[in-house]
Length: 193
Image 1: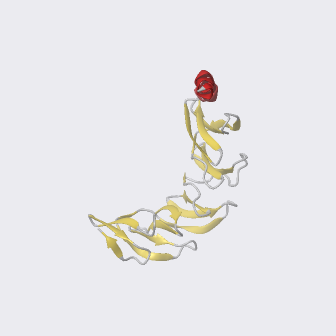
Image 2: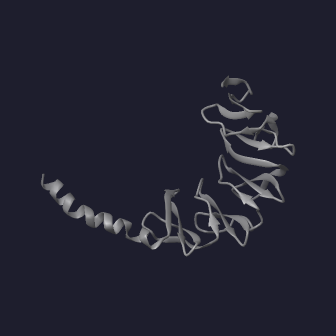
Image 3: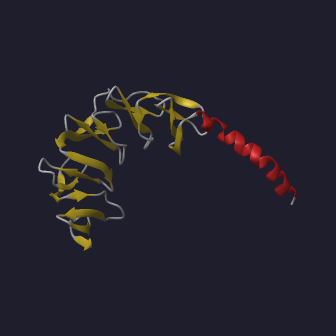
């Protein structure tokens, strides 16, 4: 009972201190990879769990950290930072996704490709659209707007034939063929509708 009394006495003060730094920002996202995305005066930066600014709010936009990296936008172009704030790419991308399975989808001149965590293009800009890798495959679309799945070399594993395709989760992916929603496995067999 004594411990409970002490806890109730100090809890408001502990919570107040824990949240004090958050009030400084317009928004604070969940902590991912030890860092939270924050917004101050319309600029994005990143803080640690204690509210210490690790990457000062200076970017026009930004993603949450994933796999130790994030993408930030400055002057209309995206580029990637490591968790220390060091750039791993130049600001050259029109669009950028989080790293997943060690690769990130990026676009230049309306074409998508993928980079690795060293910032090198490992899958050329051959796709009209693309999503992040999941379970070793990424949904991507061809010039006709049809979606399929590629592997980490950029090879089509499931040829483009769908109106849209979601990421694989637990061995299944939701796809749309014409107006019908289907769930397929990695062999492109319909698992259920």
